[in-house]
Length: 386
Image 1 (cartoon, rainbow, N blue to C red):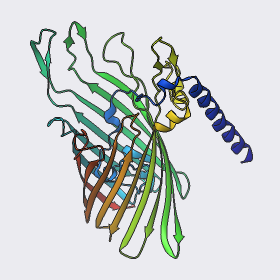
Image 2 (cartoon, rainbow, N blue to C red):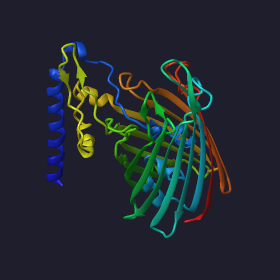
Image 3 (cartoon, rainbow, N blue to C red):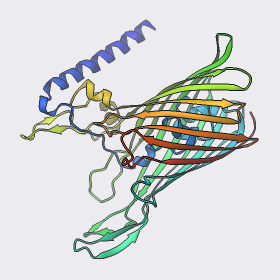
Image 4 (cartoon, one colour):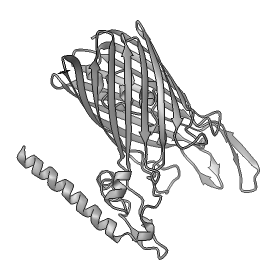
């Protein structure tokens, strides 16, 4: 254990040293400049279900439910039911357009005390688009879409610990395979995987029953996407999510949960060029594994910029008799990395095998924010006890 701690300490110190060196080379005029991470198929990062959305877009360590596939499939190993199904719908960016929608369907099945299989489909419709040529003449119309289809396997390893592997197919068809300005466009395809672990344990706090949990999930570790022959392929949003939870059973009828998630996109930070075309930061790697590793130390502004790339979610959930829930949360992203900052609230109701959840997003950067007033709806069913 002591050797492991020394290695970990040395690794962290090395990262700090590398980032400090990079930060010293960046001219003062380029420090604290806008430098958002760039990925394709960003719909993969959207919280699809109402429960996670109402708690500030978190879920890596919350109590297991039918939508765990999106957050951390390892949670399925501790779910209390035999089988479950969930359907979610989100009208997206309603402040901008009226026909962009996100749908999410998930399913899980437990075939023994230790193993669960699961699957989900996320479908993102971008609304109708009219194509015009360079002269402004009508050249057709199409409804672009993106989707991901995945299958997961979760297993209990010990009394309190589980893991999961999820395989994912991603398709992005934004032009319908047509020709635009003489250039042939094709749907983009990618294959990716998620790796998740989850730990939960009952404890006692001041004579009250409680449960603590933590989880880690590497998601969307997969191939890059290109839409045209010969074009440079773009990174998909590979992501590291780390979170923790504590649930307190206050009495026979009332319980409350507090949770927090930290997110870091595992994609390279774009380098910065000054007026003399001098490059600051690290060149974009061609190797996928190297891009995931480099994402921890390649920010041109050093350690400070790396910290800005961490997104934070915090949320609360209150249940009365496990039949009625009230939820609230907050999501924070640095203004130089996307500036998504919002509160979220929501409610949930459970009746026998059915449950219904709703969430509402409140932007803290003004009502003109495209995300403002986003609503999510989720309908689910759980069958049988474990």
